[in-house]
Length: 224
Image (cartoon, rainbow, N blue to C red; front, side, top):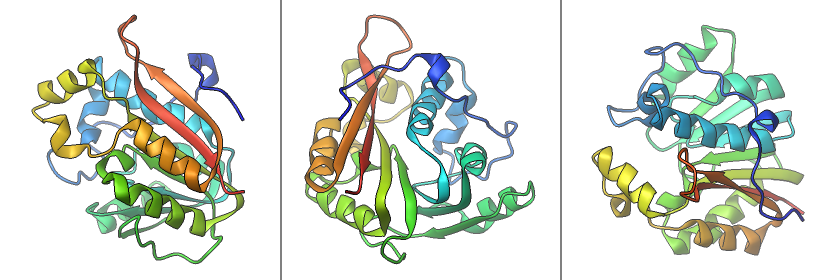
């Protein structure tokens, strides 16, 4: 097992994004809009980059909560097939966008608590800023379902925010109350993951400004 860690930027891949305006937004609150902002955009990109740094590559990956597909350019470099499951994403539009640049995807709407895939199907499952939206009693069933669709030895990589005053302030500045959206903390998520899967490690993402502590946590677990 690996202890909690901080990664230097040289160890982390750069998130590759399409030009501004190319993505098919879920709605006007879609966080893809924030990826291009100064300061806030650095934080949004960094959390994805830290998740990508944990992935080993392979044949088939599932991203739960793929949204507009901001991770797909990077995932295409490491996986032969990209699957995606999302509650509300515009599947046809996102599929068409990436098909137009030579990236085929298998996307559909659905819920992590009941996924439409066979047992042992994926090399990896990626969940970025998804699990904090589940209630605490839904976390273990979600990880059980993720475990089901993973191959033996397959990876689960997730990212969740660390609730600190800075994070609460950031949500407020963006016009949201954090508690209207986040029902589970990073501690709830890691405890549920550890009850179902084998822990590889946790990575802490520090705030953009020094001295403010970590604002995001990346979990890396495997199906044993």
